[in-house]
Image 1 (cartoon, rainbow, N blue to C red):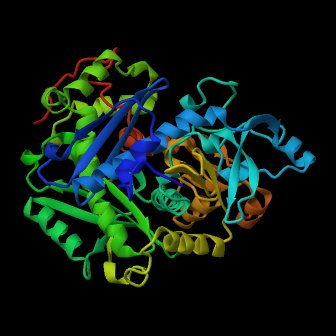
Image 2 (image 1 turned 135 degrees about the horizontal axis):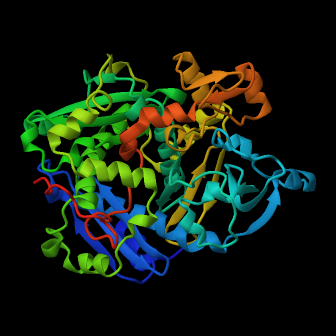
Image 3 (image 1 turned 45 degrees about the horizontal axis):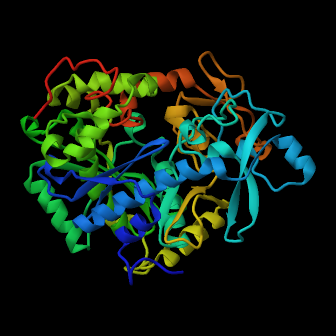
Length: 500
């Protein structure tokens, strides 16, 4: 395999793989006073605008992350429509003896009308590590309905999502990245935001000097940082970081109070370092995408001109996300803090960082080491790994979407729930779930027969109550397209000035 230059940097590799259209780079670091490098990218292609945001300890790391993210978005959009596909029902594929994924394993929404005789659109994935081909519903490969560009319209099993996307110079890096994102979202799906369990981590034994310095910087800046535990499933620490200014008059923009950094990793130190920096990235990304844009006239005028020439359309956004974000944009920092303090910043108990599971320091130094451990942990729990690849394996970078059907990542947004989250919510005696006949407002949960038997019978999920519990906090789960409120073709004017 040859590349345009000797020992190219990761950014150069990504650039060599992307289409030739210009990539606009926007430095976001200056939108906050935390001085954590954050960069955003945009590239206009025939299918629309691809974007990416990255962060790191240096500008080069931040740009690398941003290029990785835009590569993920670009290649799934370019190649999903070109991949092998067919129309068939699951029962038909079984009768043919085809290797295929049972859609019931993929955590369908409660109340779905799906049956094994429902005709679906299928595409091909690979098994890991055996690299066998199998058919999977197109929803598992897509990241949003637009990826399919209207080809072969059908009723979606569920709303496609980006969870599990990964990119890198090797299969190991791309797949380990995608799997850790799935584990991160599975870990916090019913443990934060609207269902925050309030488990704060006491940072009693942080070994990484760079992480300790970052924590000190945040504290000196006047931020009250909360590192919270989502899960330790599979022996992997899944945590998230939130925080707020102790003096709310210093908040640069109200939406920054909703910033959140998430991470899952076998090494607790790596998870903490990533989540702390992603927290800073989340703060500035929210301000950049939904706050004022006048500063772009100086920082990225050509980018702003492109956005204004082809503005996002508010009517095309997910209604719940658009409505929730519109409501928050009219709030002051104090008002928004009051809306989220009893959920996002809730603390019920603490656990010590030193008690969290981890691995020997620097034992996962390579992507191959990391993938091996993650695969071993999932396999030990009886979970299989699949992936859909969107790039030529001989090219400069690999882009793919990891699939672990039994992981559950969209319970409070799209009502997708299975045995794992049912068991957790049942153990909490949550009114969101139960066994037997669904009560008013609830829907039956579609489950494989083995899962239903393990639970003790048919299960239900109260979709009505879930929407009530999430309410305006939906803006923490889903956001409308960037700049739709500032330059969108049909965006209403803000009722209050931008917070500065």
